[in-house]
Amino acid sequence: MSYQHHTLSNGIRLIHRSSSSLVAHCGLTLNVGSRDETLSEQGLAHFIEHVIFKGTRKRKSYHILSRMENVGGEINAYTSKEDTCIHGSFMHPYYERWFDLVSDIMFNASFPERELNKEKDIILDEINSYKDNPAEQIFDDFDEVVFDKHPLGRNILGTPDRIREFNRDWVHDFIRRNHATHEMVIASVGRIPFAELIGLAEKYFGNAAPGSRQHNRQAFVAYRPRQKVVGRKNHQAHCMVGNQAYGATHSKKNTLMLLNNMLGGPGMNCRLNMAVREKYGFCYHIESNYQAYSDAGLFSIYFGTDPHYVDKTLYLITRELTRLREQRLGGLQLKRAKQQLIGQVAIAFESQLGEMLSMGKNMLVFNKAETIEDINEKISSVSASGLMEVANEVFEPGSLSTLIFKPS
Image (cartoon, rainbow, N blue to C red; front, side, top):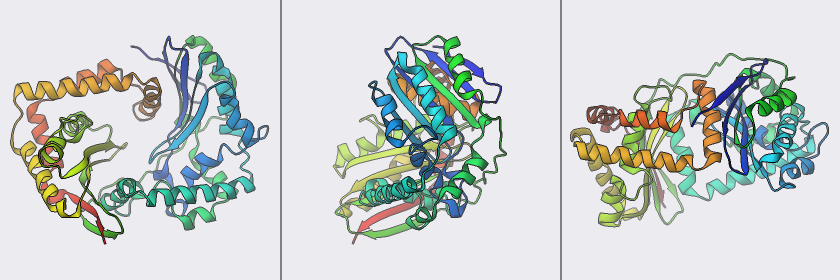
């Protein structure tokens, strides 16, 4: 597996992997997300991701939405804490159609006031749908617990009061400050000669005015463990436990990835699932997660259970964390853990859409994309002593925060 790279004269980067598939995947990723908002702008990056599809100088919303769908493709977008992406999947002969559409959306969006007001109601409904799902809302609320009063702790969707204030001036000002060609990456996986791909990028993106910006992202340095219980009208209790963790460029990131996978990854034989669900039946679902941002990170454990089992489940979680802190893995255990994660990475790479999205994100952070061979090599280099060291740093009991949605 190999990637091909090119940089346009205005700073937009292009990365491509050739594929024999009839279906191509292409995305434009921008190094801007909710973390780049001021407090008064909370939710604006996500709002722009919605309204950028609502019209350009030459296309109405219907024509934008139909452009790829008319040939059996699709176009979508997402906003995260640190990046925004517009991406599409389509039959490979339609690459130019995608480039034409996305460049028009990116550089010629008109943001009709009527459409902006309509989209506010849609996002308010999206916020309410999250509030109706405590198993999803608790993840956003736990960000706020860990990253207290920091931009990383703010909900990507924003707040109803802020969203109602947004208008075209807000949108244009945010784009002017944050959308810069040196912070854009076009990623592609598909059946197209790279020279032809470069030609399309030059044709549709090469005339964009070059620009860069100074990242003034506030570092997160003031973590304090917090315990919080919130009363809710639920049948189940929903709980999260976690700690701040390593950023994307930290030398211990891959060790924590392996540790997290052993503890509460997708495998049914992960330690938490075996110790809590399989042995005692205390909960239907339990998992752990590790999210690495550019300069910070978050490790968390989530479970939902009957209110009577909350304390017992927390005790079992603590016991598993203690074992990882105090008991060194044997050679066979470590080998199996590595093999499992390497296999999961291989399966994940089977999704060419997922690979393309990962390529764009990695180019923004590292200015390169890791191949599956690169990732496997890093997983293989993790040592048992390294796992214990990371476990003692991240799973330290006095450093853990807790959030519980308790039925009332």
